[in-house]
Image (cartoon, rainbow, N blue to C red; front, side, top):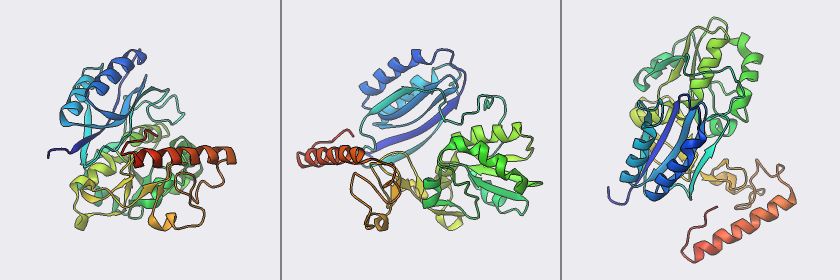
Length: 302
């Protein structure tokens, strides 16, 4: 469709001996093609979500597939009426998804992939425990029916949570899921290293499930948080009703914005106590600049 923006969510675990060598060429190409978003590069591979014109996305994906070990790169696509990112960020990181477990290696072994069409049957079985590996604020707006919420603030807390709770799941098969699949690559490898034998994860993550499974047949409840301006998506990957708190980057419903703690661009009920007055003054100035840019018909790259 003319004018539509193509969005591609991708990751690939592979060994990059010199990830810094890939940063500048990739950034230059993406900029030249009008592609925005975020790409993370580390010794363990590449991860990110990008958006732009069809031809631009194709050019960037082709470039990434030419990187060492990335020929079989897989990605998930969706579309939007407007660009969901303000700018392009290509960053070097220690990990492409932070778990703080140096021995975890998804290239060595991961759990059994389960296709979206087979996921409902698996998670409905009596001997299966279903674990949501995402952050607490993501789980809050949507998750699978009967899934366990570890209530972790970051993925790096998952190993400690597992250690504290693993006895609850003795003699159970473990099924895990996340937004696009990347966190489960690490979490399933971690569980295998801990001696758990029957480990499964949703291939393509929630996004692939919402793309392929009709709402009538779905066991998904609510919305799926995404890390761009859409904030959330539902079945068919249609943008949802949530907005973003520009202070803490957590999702906000209309009811959340009606709470007395909420101040647009400055704070919400979740993060009111997380920032100093100096922080809030800085946020207010940023919000002021955003409104000025909007009044001029311009985009503020916040």
